[in-house]
Structures are given as structure tokens and as C-alpha cells.
Length: 320
Ligand code: MN
Image 1 (cartoon, rainbow, N blue to C red):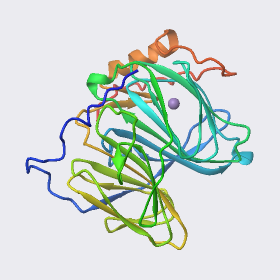
Image 2: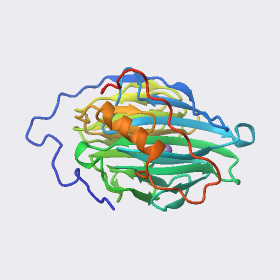
Image 3: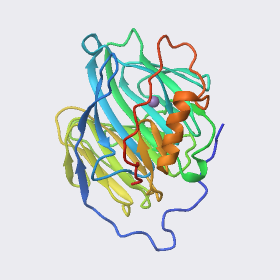
Image 4: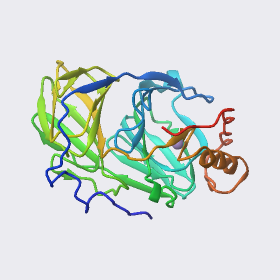
């Protein structure tokens, strides 16, 4: 178990008067469609990383998918594959996914329940939508581990937050603190992750940590964040220096968003395939270990072959 929380006992809110200048401007980041490949070729909408932005806090990957009719798409079937240097966060709006990993975890990912897997030095896992799933809809997020913890041991956590009701909003805090609720799941850097459902035309103002930068992914509806209108599948980015953020549902139907945040991640990372490292050599070693080694353990109970690593590019991978 890791159980390390570097964020909660360290003041990081600029209490010495050195808080950064507020920046009210919201950048709108649009998604690109990415086919995940494999026998059942799901397509996801990826808003992070992209050219304009690599990270929001330690959040380094935001994939948004569905609602997909699995009778049409075949659902999700991701064979054994490895991870290093990151945590995966699975959060569903609809459907169910069976998770197995080389720690021995066997869990079901369900709507409104956090499943957080820590890859650390090396883990492998599978994700398969269950036969009872008719509509698959959710997000897959990655968190980069800070240098001092990136080789930590494998871990798996589950948490079903109690919904917080306020101002026509229903808020589920799966990581960090918001609206008076705090997730018990520890993080390696100060982080926030929450689902917010807004009633038609509801406005809510949430207290935020001014040391955090934030991202708002719109799943359904059109939502104004700090004055900027965001449409479905867009990601709004708000920099540090804000102790509040106001969200307004501009539509006649319920809107749903995912709010992520964290203190700016100070390290450059190298992301390639399923790996987060610091250098080309980190990645190339992990690739070699997946192809030929025992570093990532074995996933029991999956019927099928593992995913081979793609070829590395012919040029060196560069940090960003
Ligand atoms: Mn994975």
C-alpha cells in the first residue's frame, strides 16, 4: 500500500500573502477523436494531453467516451497492458467495467464509484465491459506520479462518494476536497476530482484552492465556467489564483461535468504509450520489460492475449 499524502499536511494556499495573481481567463481546449484500436475499436475524445497543454495539476490524460450503445460498438475489451509512473482513474456515468490487475485486484467499476489504480514501478491490467452493459459512458483519467513516488508499489482503491447537494448541483468528490466533502483516497500531490450534475439553469459557486489550476470537462449540456461558455466534450482550463469558481448550466436540461484540479506539476514528463517517465531511457526500459521481463506481473482470469508494445519512434522521446 502506498498511503502517502503529500498534500494534506503541507500548507500550499499562499497563506503568506504570496498567492499568485488571479487569472479569470478560461482557455477552451477541444477534444480530438482517438480510436483505441484492438478487436473492439472504441473511439474516445481526448482533451489531455494536447499541443496547448500537457498537464492540469498532476492530471496528464483525459479520455471521455460515450454514450456508446455496446450492441453497436461491442463495448470495451482492453487486454493485458502495462503502466508505469502513473495512476489510472476510472469514473463511469453509465455501464459497468470488470477490472483485473497484476496486484490481484478484481473489481467492478460502476457509475458514481471511483476506481484508482496505482501503477508505480509497474502494473498490468485488463478492462472489459460486462455482459449486462447496454450503454457505456464515462471518463478515463491518468495522474502522473511525482519523481519521489513514481517507483511506488502497486495499489488499487475504491471509493463511492456520498453526493453533496447545493444550489441545484449534485457533487460527488472522488479525490481531494470540494463543497465540504473530502475523499478518503490519498494522493501523491494535491489533487481534486469531482463529478457535478447541475439542474437546468442552476448556478453554483464553489470555493477552490487558489494554489490549484483547474480543468472542467463538459459531458452533457453547455456550462459557463468563470464566464466562459463550454460545450459538450470541451475542457475549460482555469489557472491558479482563484479561490472560487462559478458554474452555470445554460441549458433547459441537466448538465454534467467533471472538475479536476491540482497544484501545477513542476516536473517535465515523458509520456509514451501507457508509460509516464522522465527520460527516453525510462520508457525504453519499460517497453523492454513488458516485452521480455517480469516487471509488470501477471493478470489472472483474462481470456486472451496481452497487448504487445508498439515500436518506439526512431527519434528520442523528449520531455515536455
Ligand atoms: Mn490501462
